[in-house]
Image (cartoon, rainbow, N blue to C red):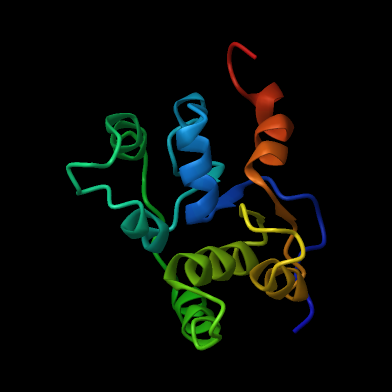
Amino acid sequence: MTGALQSAPSSYVLETSAAINLERSNRLGDLPPPGNWVILPSGVAGELHLDYEETPVATKKWAAKGKIAHFTSQEESLYRKLILHPAIGDGEGAAIAMAYCRNEALVIDEKKTGEVWRIAQSYGITCMVSEEFFDKIKPRLPGF
């Protein structure tokens, strides 16, 4: 499938690995809450274990301030196809489906030569690692 992305994305879909790395680098709290231009799919939220006691409080607070994104029927259909691939887990599938269907960028901390990255790009999705994402959005953040 060739991609749908024609213009620069205005929003970014976080995949689990990127959210965890933003959390570990203490940058997650600098982001606006999920919902406007930072999209946190419900599948990713589930993988972050927001209801677990061990999950960092800052991550729980950040997610609670915003809105977790849920599938449209088109996104769910694509997600179901994506997770049939052995390299794609639930969070990756959810993030790729939302990035594709919403015509947004995917923030994923997998090697750029990795299989999941290649699959996302085969859909025409703009992919970036969390460091690139954070550098790109700094001008939109207060205090940076």
